[in-house]
Image (tube, rainbow, N blue to C red):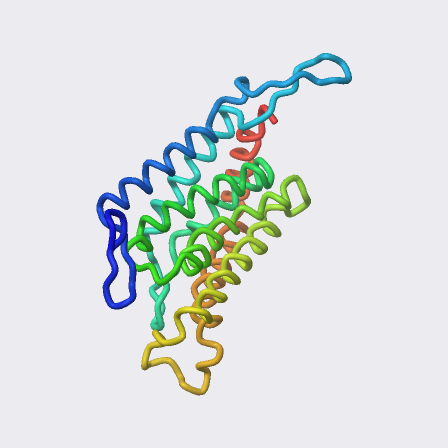
Length: 236
């Protein structure tokens, strides 16, 4: 079709040049986002003091580490489900932690970068439409950053994690109803066909969510996350 997209039987896929260009665009956007906070200072009109804006180096370091861990964990699929999808090794937790540590701006920004990584992981080879890509990848995985709205609240990590995974599932489900109903497996009960996108997506998301929440209740895990959170917020 072009230098950047192939088309076959109505389906689109990125060419090698398209993939390379997409990666370059993402890297440029990340570099612009990652400018040190001291580079973006502005004067406080009330007292003449300088107020720092943007992301701090500590936020960048912790966010980048969490995104890398999430991406690696997304490859470790511990429970494959019969209708598709799989429970990963707590990959969603690492992204929601960023929002919990630093709030919605950093959380949504990091989750947005993660959505591009997920797209390149398996979405770039199967594109039905721009909206399908947004629902399945960019909107769904960016939604994990809504955990930032629960930052500093009591039980904020738990509430933020639950809200984040529910929003992720919502976007996947909308995309399922719009684009994936014709791909329902033969093994899926036809009497439940109307609920296929909902059951398909929330089955693995909620199962992973339950396992992750149980993991978070382990005293050693609680203590470790509390210490890491204090380190992450040290300059906040």
